[in-house]
Length: 306
Length: 311
Image (cartoon, rainbow over all chains, first blue to last red; front, side, top):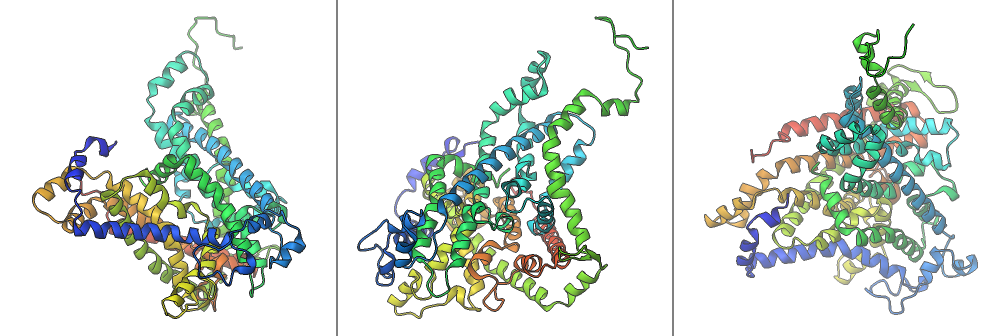
């Protein structure tokens, strides 16, 4: 469905394209909303390139008088601890380790969750087996359960398995499925014409072959959509990694940032270092948006329509 | 006694009742095999924990000693706990501070984009905040709203206005948390509305404008009624999310100052991981669950979900 192309609005748009007072107000409003969206991000960048010693003097400026990359070097652990302390830094943030952990955490979950959810979704959409509808109903019902109900028993389970502060413990609740992912993909598989599979089955193909070679390739769009949504959610996940991985070497970015912030004494947090780390943490998301902009926008836009 | 069937011979049906035959058929086996990994994940991390949370809520358990069954005591204590009621009140207030303004701003932004610029670039810009984690967003605003050095306060100072404590004041902290989340969610919510706007037939607007209807009138008579299914979806999901506000509180305020932002999930977290009252925390999570279910059903009913006026 592409209303922009099929509807005569374009013609109408041209006709109405004069600057009436109403239209000017509308443009101004839009500009204000976009400004509100972007302004805080500029302050992050501005602070990150301000020298820690000059933070106070430069507070009123919108651009630092002598921008520096020192804070990024500090966040990346490229300066010695003494040098760091000398400019008001507090501790070295283990930024690269946290970044690596976040990438591993996200990649593992996105790949395996999407794959296993797709397998289940295919079975729910196409194969007949006793108990199918009941199990699918349970999956659907589970989307209603708030995280606050699940985290205590899940924490106890992971603790009893001895998986606190381990990678397994961090990814365990997410690697095999989420009810949403199964539900989402099943909708698409239901719409795939059956003839495609039937021909393959007549040729003696196995269900897994059909799934792997026919279903997955033609479902690229929904799979990418789901993978993007999962990537965003996983990259930003805070609560679960926070309660199961207090260990320095295991922290993902969100946890490391929170730890870094709470380590700093109340009086003088290392704001320039913190903003540099924050900016570095945003970069991967920014890259995702630049490289896959259209898909990201369409995935999010789609997440509400189903 | 059974012989391998000769090639081409009609295979005799095995002596199994039809139900069982279906149970062990090749297709059934394949089906189960396909859902097996997801099913294991579901049982371990959704089904059993739900049951377990329910049963823990009837015990007294600090994780060190074995759980002691206490019947309904946790629930009774809950009703008598002023902190619990306070947390519920704070959460309710938070939802009220968050949802109406966020929804109105998002709708405004969506209509503006729909009428002025359909560019994918603008949409990419406005969803940027949503792509940042709650932790990053909280960090940004802790700095931006810093009582002395934060740019907003510097700006207020330049205008000759009084500096505000924002997160630091019991009167402003909750509204500040709401504002921060409005900033993060406005663009994403606008995108959902925008998608809904695209499915409204343009011909309706054309007909209305030929009849001399103003933009304002078209919005109330065409856009809003036809957008209702999307609005219901947006409201239901954002209210559910808003009720479970946690990350921003955890990073920016820690429930303070003086409990002004101790929302329900933060209070559950405190009970579970700071006071180690697993039973009490679970009982509270059950109540939260119940509230969310009631709210969802209520909202769906209220807005006659899923029925567009377009039909």
